[in-house]
Image (tube, rainbow, N blue to C red):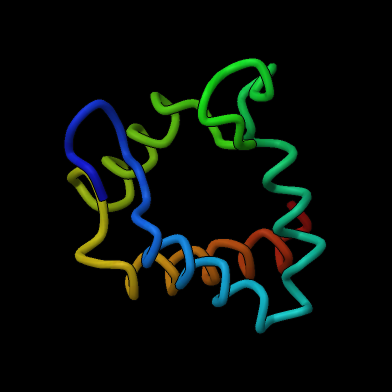
Amino acid sequence: MSRGRGPTLSAGELRQVAVAVLVRPALWLVSLRQLRRLVAPGWWRRAPWLPLPPAEYVRFRLVTAYGSDGPDGPRDLARDLVAYLQWCRDSGW
């Protein structure tokens, strides 16, 4: 995770997060639902042209979840994302 302008994922971190979701078909629908709920409006008009949540929201969630700018590494990030998606699925969110 970057500590500069905002949280960013390296290629390796992004790959691990993607694989963590891809190997769990039960989480595909909930991950798409959450992505749709969290992406910044008009994301296609701004670089990097990816459907990402607003940086301020991500920063807030990282501080409330970890007490800092992010987890200790990509393994923690992937594990925590899967736990979050399972919680969303189980709670009907």
